[in-house]
Amino acid sequence: MSVDVLLINPISPVELLSLLFEIPFSLLILARALEEKGMEVKLLNYPTLTSWQSDHLKKKISKLDPKIVGISLHSAALPQAIKIAKITKDFSNAKICIGGPHCNADITFIHRFRNIFDYQFVGEAEITVPDVFLKILREKKVERKVIFCKLPKNLDLLPSPAYHLLEKKERFLVNLSFSRGCPFNCSYCAIQTTMKKLRHMSVKRSIEEITYVYESLGSRYFYFQDPNFTIHPKWVSEFTKTLRKEKIDIKWRAQTRCDLVNLKILKEMGKSGCIGLGFGVESFSPFIQRFINKRMPFNKIERAIKQTKNCGMDADIFLMIGFPIERKKDLFLNLLGVKKTQPTTLSISFTTPYPGTKLFHQCGFSDKNNPWDKYALLQGPFPLCKSKYLSVTDYFFFLNKLSRYPILFGDIFFWNLALLKYAYPFIPTFIQRQLKFFEKSIMKFRETAFKIATQRIKIQWDKG
Ligand code: B12
Ligand code: SF4
Image 1 (cartoon, protein in one colour):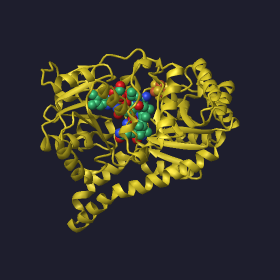
Image 2 (cartoon, protein in one colour):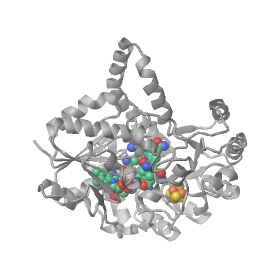
Image 3 (cartoon, protein in one colour):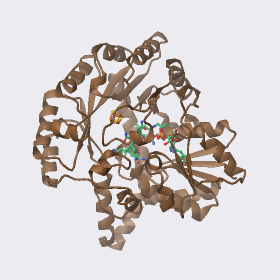
Image 4 (cartoon, protein in one colour):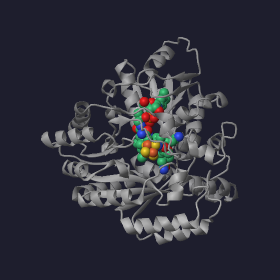
């Protein structure tokens, strides 16, 4: 048996949310675009969750014997991507193609990793990649190693994500997105490198996508992953009205900026099944806000949270800590801000300078001094960004003060990886063997965790 294309989504090992909920949305869209050109596509999600799954991957690669392997590159999951590619090279003759946010930001990446990968795609894949893959399958020459993709201007013409490629349990909470791009310029955000130009799908097509998933997969829970769901108020108004008019009984969440909501929009969203909105606050300190080019006044944050909650929805906020210039005062302003605004949940991430962002340069990195190449090979430094003025104890103190609020953590993998990498050689062999056993059972753990988590979401979201 030999499949045309195997798409693989590596995920960072200790990213807990991804562990449970990562649905490789971008690969699902690409998969459908390839299928429409007659290619047989298989998808592997979470194959090297940790090093322990490499045996599983070896077996899969040998069995499927793909002609092309396409790997989606998130910066966070670079070491896993490298490992997948090496295993693929050892166990098949497949051409290894890469794309995704890291490739879009670092367009010369492949030149430094040319022994591992064959082709790098930059940009949104749907229009260009299927034709190039066909060329590869027909063993025609592809001139360049780096291929720039044509930007899809009309999102209505793009294929729907190939959800049938997911396992049934993975279809519970469905990611969809009806817009691409963002006109803002926050310094930490990698979207500027991926998709700057703002485009929207029509409401008609968006509703068709939801209805398809709702009817064919039976999913009722959606996370709309648009960069700023409410950026186009007229669109939102028409969208929510149609959901109600067509009696589409779904529960959904989305994310946006605090200055892009008002009472009218929020009321309409609440009535059409929206049960929560995530707001990228990042920091309550005006000093930090200036640094990251967010400039969101406190009164707008306060109003957005209050109005969202008044409309019966969760108001979740995202905060970032560990900026290079962060001081005690800034952490104190975060505590005060959370206390005053009382969001439903807090999601705290450790600041990470992704390639291509302004923050990357603000942290002193450049194309010549790119720490992500080292990270890809699991060579420090970890973490990539920390405050000049604060110690780990200061942060523990801060987090401890916040502990009575429901907190989720993001971007913790750098800290854990650092520990794993430096500690492993000092661990006695018999414990290493135990760890291997533990690692194998992680997949089992994930299955159970997935069941519990989906059950919990169902209860909470249904309550909402
Ligand atoms: C949904 C989402 C998630 C979901 C699902 C991720 C997924 N795999 O789909 C979850 C919550 C799990 C998640 C997790 C994380 N995410 Co996220 N996520 C997003 C979000 C909001 C939408 C992604 C999306 O669907 N975009 C739309 C599609 C069409 O675009 P795309 O992903 O770029 O894919 C296109 C091209 O890149 C290309 N392509 C992609 N893969 C491949 C592969 C091949 C072979 C080819 C040829 C082409 C190709 O074609 C695609 C179709 O056009 C984006 C922001 C955004 N709007 O893009 C952030 C974003 C991708 N995430 C980001 C980050 C940082 C993370 C986390 C590290 C967060 C954390 N705190 O831990 C984790 C890491 C996950 C991991 N793999 O290890 C960054 C990535 C930065 C970077 N350089 O890697 C982004 C850009 C957010 C940001 N604004 O900075 N994320
Ligand atoms: S953080 Fe949000 S508002 Fe800022 S550039 Fe990224 S997507 Fe746009």
